[in-house]
Image 1 (spheres, rainbow, N blue to C red):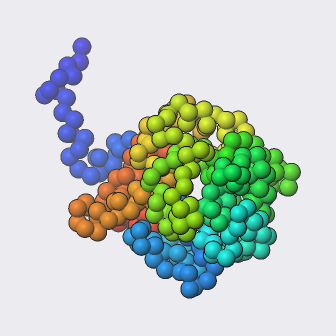
Image 2: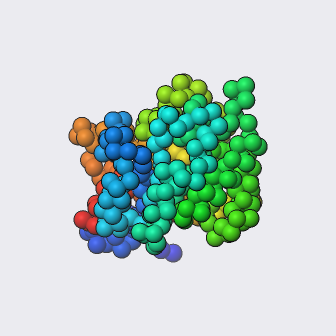
Length: 331
């Protein structure tokens, strides 16, 4: 019988150099694992830094293409584009989302022509477009599910027609994946991938993102807890994912990320399918501010992404994508 006790077993043998540590590493992060979220505005006057998200900016179309090209040079191959819609284009029903000539649709058309081999991910949700900041149509201050789904199906078709590689429903309406899949298939978009925000929690970590897209003011303190998931639940997350997979989701995502590593792990173990995570604005901003104040080393950002991979995530949406890709190259 082999003696597994000290000193026969010395685990430090496999830690004595970086080369050995790399050789036996169980999880690694590459630029292929990174998706960079970007904020698109309609005019240069609306462009500029997002104060609550260090290093993150809103870009007008031409500026954004330059930023994307810079990220591509560092190995980033996937981008999630979020529109920052001016208040004068918002209304109760989010009708600008269904305009075939809105500025996001036009951007996606040009993106697909410029970068046919780069992945564009388009958010399917009404909250950037609604005057009240909710993800659907309101009736008596409640988001009504089925009528919202009809609009989401139409929005998904417009985004797919514009060239989006992946449509990503983030609204958390019941049954929306089935509606969107049916709408895409009926409109010759059978190959369009659906990335479902399958387990999106009603989290307090979204604040800086809502600043960035201008929905925080519209919400005016209102809650999304009647449709986003209760932060206390994990079995419910598995139920949500199972329904979305059954309805036709190709990839599932958990949001937020680090506070929900247990959910990522459970989903990956149970469903064994592509599983993404979103390192959301609050997570990113906390780490970035701590780094800027010298409280943490900049390497914590990469370490945080390793935690997603270790939990079972295949790819991560992170505002630090380019920074991390550079760090990986430097190593």
